[in-house]
Length: 249
Length: 325
Image: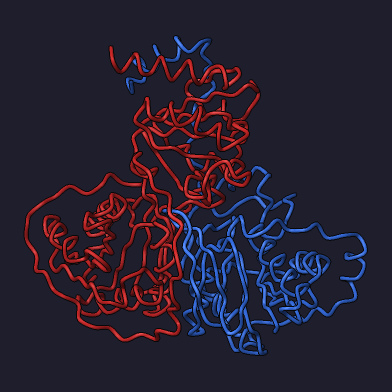
């Protein structure tokens, strides 16, 4: 079975994100780019399935500027077999991403898609579901455990009240949540090997698609910084403050 | 713009607070976007009872279905019913709370009707754009949906829950809806946390524990009594959940639950960005941590530096006394 793992290049979440003075976007100068952490978890899950003999090939794909090939190579260094980059310099919303990924899915005979549940920059959490609907496939979102028992996938999902275990037919879209696994670091030999693995470059036009996004970001801003920092010396002082200052007790 | 449809979730027939928050957002959009009328859809077990309650909120039509296919939540089944309800009410705008069901299901609705979706909105701006969080809430974006049909999910802390208005509206059973059952799959089982404590999303006080608690026994020994003294819900940091000290549905954070209670007490939590994303809109924040440099103190209104194993029992007693006296 071939597994498709879409990944997204995002700014490092440890870094301080600065909004441009005119609110037109974020400052990208000097930003460290990483693989979206949830997508890394998805790659790891696919690799484990391959190592367990449940999959034959792991193909990673990304949409972005040519520099995004770096993130693709990183996942190939983790162990993915080959990569596809759909080159696009502009903004890609969840909608457009789902259309591009649907086109990629249709090019080959994939048995499963595993991808992160959300990207840590946009936090929209839509692409897996949009993709599943466009392909007419089942979805299993917010997965913390995945068992493949062809023709089914048994997925444990993290939901508001706890855990929900569902059984869906393959192929399906699984969106990875935090606790699905802990991804491996790409080992140095992997990084060397990755340079030799195939990396296909495509354009939107080659997929018969046009670039347009339907969620328009008109302006970005920074929220008001919460003023904190006051310390109290004792439990008694805290109680007094909660009673008389905050009036929550 | 035509009508708006609000997806109302229920627990045992009682409308969820998060759905009433979504209704507040819908009302704000009604004026901002000139939406003619609001309708509602209730699905699943006890939908009829929930629909009766919904009648008190001034909807035009309240559609409902307790169809067998909806007995347990499944994205494909619920989405198909929401799409049908939108069609029957001529609604081009569909709004849901950003609960795990809303997050799971709404993009399926959006793709089915070719709508663009704005996820987890925080506000409706005066110019009609929607405010939503990026980068774990460290950046705010004003967005515009460029499609005729639009889907929106609303963060559960973003608006006050809607008040009852007139008891008008018509109850309309939805009728059967076709969808591909194979696509919907089946629910095998649940592992849900049972608790007498308030729900995390609803509680006015939350007491959260971090990895410093070091065990689930310590959560029971230290966090639970403090929460009970406050009448609070219990939360946890991601680190605590990952370590197995707390179940996943207690996680507060960027990808866990976002809460905004009157009082948030962070015990042994360092204050990683992703955790702050889930609680920084709390009215008041108390932090207890032995590391005076912990980032949590930067957002805390009242920081107490010290050993939580000594301080928390003291605080528990003091809260009990303060509430009794």
